[in-house]
Amino acid sequence: MSKQRIKPADQELKEKLVALNRVAKVTKGGRTFSFSAIVVVGDGNGTIGHGLGKARDVQESIAKATDDAKKSLIRFPIIKGTIPHEQKGKYGAGKVLIKPAADGTGVIAGGAMRAVLEISGIQNVLAKSQGSSNPHNVIKATIDALAKLRSPHQVAKTRGISLEKLFEG
Image (cartoon, rainbow, N blue to C red; front, side):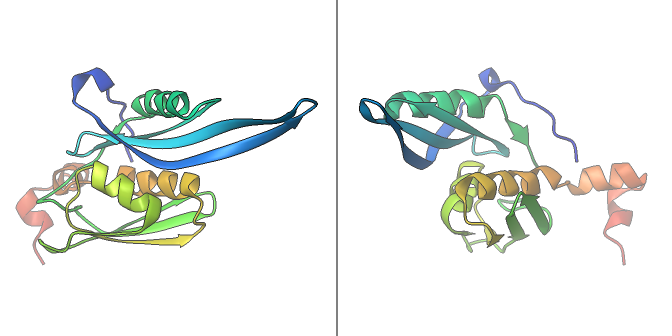
């Protein structure tokens, strides 16, 4: 599992707001509202990052979350619009399972997982979120699963064999 960092200036990134939460703090002068935003950013070609931003107003919290997301970019392999192999991811109580799918299947995923998979550039994938439905944990578990993905080239290189030999048998 190689989590190499990518510089955000290198590519065009799209952003997607996953969750926006209004939080109230009760003070002597009444309630003070602030906002917490979770954003995922990706280039649509195997790069993904997530971020959390908190501020007194919505736009500022989204901007902070986007900046945070650009600091946590990772790359993973996409082969013919899907992932190379089945993979499980875990973060806290959030567990996810992602499977490669045939062409034309689309992104079969719910909630926070769908946002992550769509913005990362995967067109065909089957996904299941097990455990926590908390968007924080689901996003981090999904990104964990994507970070664990290895392309056939990486597997062949690690084992010290050719690609042809890898697919024999």
